[in-house]
Length: 71
Image (cartoon, rainbow, N blue to C red; front, side, top):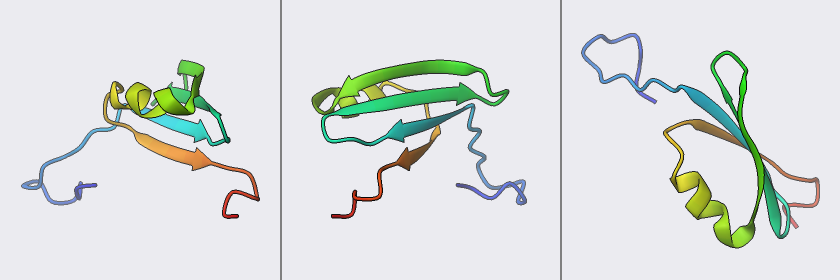
């Protein structure tokens, strides 16, 4: 992310925040705006995940997975 302290640097404004709950075959996507209002909540299959999130505007995305995910 660009520094907001330097006025000459480009500034990236993030309007939405998203979270993805990782699972084996289906993923839950949850997106909220800066006020915390839910913009989207849906479940998608593994084959449609990249297509779905590539159509979103720029946002920060956090990933959640179970304790066994590294294995």
